[in-house]
Image (tube, rainbow, N blue to C red; front, side, top):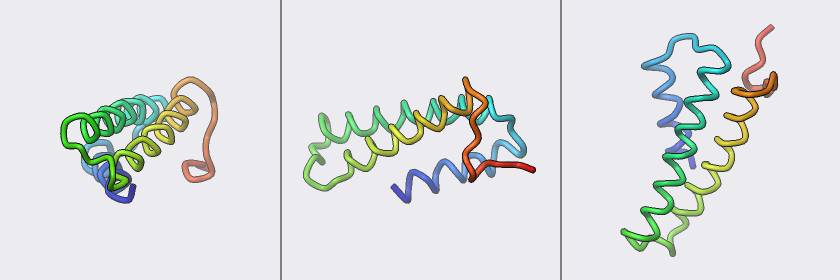
Length: 84
């Protein structure tokens, strides 16, 4: 989970300097889909279902989906992203 969060933070740091809330939401939705695909790949192809890797990717997928939908389609801002 820490690796997924670090990879997403690195992407936003390198490629997007000051994205809007909708842009951030869209990219989080894309990352949610990638995490889900990674979980499916870890189970079906690599047979890593006993190490917790697929569970961590699935949890990250759900968390990214929720935050991405909140930022993209609603005027919801978590405390972490709040700007005054």
